[in-house]
Length: 231
Image (cartoon, rainbow, N blue to C red; front, top):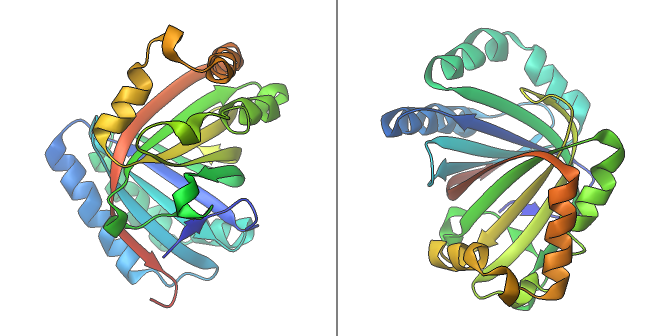
């Protein structure tokens, strides 16, 4: 199964789609499943399809050997004349985010390995933060290493921070926080904790994030399909 690791130097792509109705989300998943099941692109390593929970949409976490391999895919006739038009008809926004993995941490019971697989039944939160280019590394630190108490949170499984490299559908620099939880209830409880009840390190880290981020967009998901090259 695919894993997320800062030690891996391949390209991690996060394709985020929003739509305006649950039935369109179902269609998105069907179309994405067709593409993933047939994938045999040069340099493609894995794809993991996520079904949105809070508001209609999907996410596809894709691992590529390199940016050059991805650009070949984007330049292909199938992508330009079938894939993009099909998705454009059923979505309200398309964001294709290219990233490097900057930081990961897991609950001690997971041994430091971030796995993405439908059998794990993770409740996954994906949040994209806009940021000025000169503040991108500081935001990565505030979202990742500065969150020193997150492993103590009830129901926490993992946190990964993606440093944005380039994108289609997003202007300027960005950073992504990708976190896994054992349930919606655990994630909601973590988010709803009163300020006075938060560890001091979390208060400081969140204050830094608030100062650095120029915009924030978030949704939650369940993984519904994963496939790796050769599978």
